[in-house]
Image (cartoon, rainbow, N blue to C red):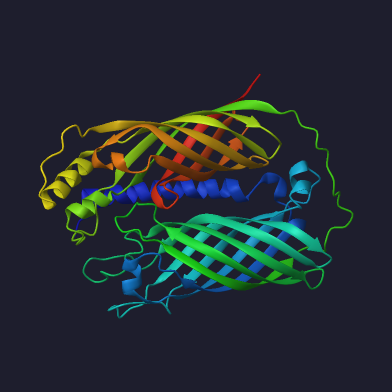
Length: 411
């Protein structure tokens, strides 16, 4: 059977996303100054947790949620004498591969298990406290995942965690580590894992897992001695600017609503969204900056919103409401923040729509958030690339954004 034009188009979009994410993952985890065999750390982890049920729908169809995960990581410790390395207690950056085993989790009226997830991600492990061979640290993970058992309206109607195989992975943990010898160490940790398709599929309940793990580490070299513990705090505070553009893709829940929430079609249309942003930030230190920005958003297709409003009014037996508008453009003002480590920045933004006309959605709270990361190329015409997730009310994800931009210092 030939693939439909929509399916071929969707596969191409997924492939492009995969390439972009892999590029950002490499930029995140493989910094040229860190690649030194003497700084290498190999780590294996065994995780067990519970799949959480955040809403009544999942509570009604998820019978058991026991999850196990097996990770293998390759990291490199930033051991030089730079400000970033010393002030951050020589963190470890690296890449990891994980297999998440859902064979013990069961859905109601589903004979098969949920399937497995395979993820490739970058991570940072930063020490908070060290006393002799005992250390307390936190880790942050971000990458991509492949879901082996997605939603199907006929054979797997209850597997609503994701209706597409490609997902985004985000993880965080608090670790207690003990170095047993020059080359080996063990650890225990508590943490959370989140998997989501970022609305690239019509079903996107996501997977939220809380649990803990045990780990075994191999250090290529013995612990470094006589490392500097202080660094000059001299820094010239300054203003700088960003100008960026980008976009992303998503499905509309309104299409599922128009289908009577039956999801009769396995694949729904995927829509593009675009944005342009600019801001001016004040760099308070080498590691932190904040400021104000302006955002302009463009949605090429608003027809689904119009049809969904008509459907709601017809279902409620109400007359059409006059004055409802559907505009492709919206604009907002935002407070932006960045936290730096060398050329990498973690970004966070909270904004307020100044103008947004999307029919009956105009009564939704006009607050939006964006969280992500950027990698700067200061020697490449001051360019940067980044990705982030845009959400509303700190709980409802809209879509994943990918961007490219330029920055400069205001003199």
